[in-house]
Image (cartoon, rainbow, N blue to C red; front, side, top):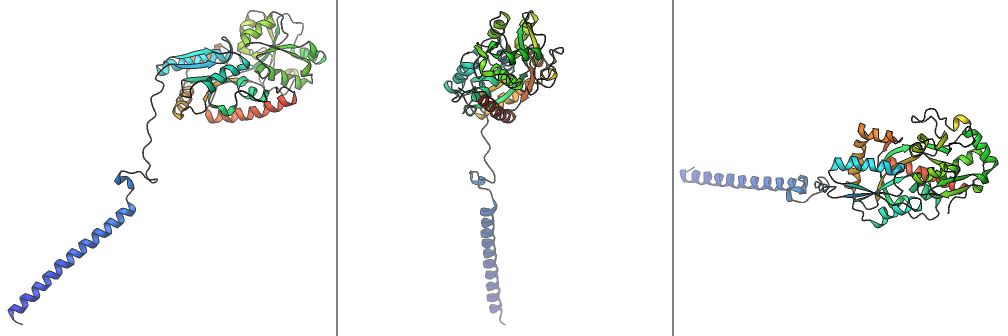
Length: 361
């Protein structure tokens, strides 16, 4: 083979190698591009995908101004005292004023309607809920102005034992004797309550059902709350007041009334010498008092979370627990989920009781 021919063959081979190298580079680039399109999250292009969600927006700062804490009863009652202790703690915790506003009337419905239906659902109007203006209100009224679905039950704070109080010089030596008298003379029993759906009304109805007395022949005297109710009994204007121990305690300590019995399975730590109704043969009394906080439907989630977490912390604070103990209330925290479950269960029970006793109006 001539030298010129060899040079031509070498030139052809060199050209082929260059072409092959270029083709391999091209094919590799295409392959990488295809794999990248399939496997690389779209966030590389600046758009979130389900595989890698965009980070959530941080919750707005809250609170940034004064909060109204609506108590739908008169000042001085159990709901009011617990709300004031709570407001005091959270005001210091958050560095913003929380002002307790009493809006009594309608068995707790007036204040509840204001907080849940009239005020803005922005987290700056809280409602001091309790058993009377929630489960009992719904059960006691055919068309309740405030319903469970109108609110977000945020946290339960405390509970109280139901106590039966009469005038200090009343003739009955114990609750069993008093119950026998009521069964024989139901028309002579007058009892106080904030309304037909109040805590006292259900406490009385359950007790009368347990002893077989005629609820319809007794007479309710409407009051604005415990601070109005117990003095009426002390003054002889009503025979019976059914409230928490804490609500009755001031008049009890003053010697104006006496407590014949308490409900529940065990004696109250606040009145260890007073027997339970069950000890005296009157069984099945389960009504108990509780209070907490709720907000109108539509209130932002971050508000509910802030209150729930802060109340849980508050319930562990010795100074706050002492405040509850001083007013004879037991701390009884429940988060929003537990609170809602308890409310639904109570509503069903109280509705059945109210229907049976023809209490629903």
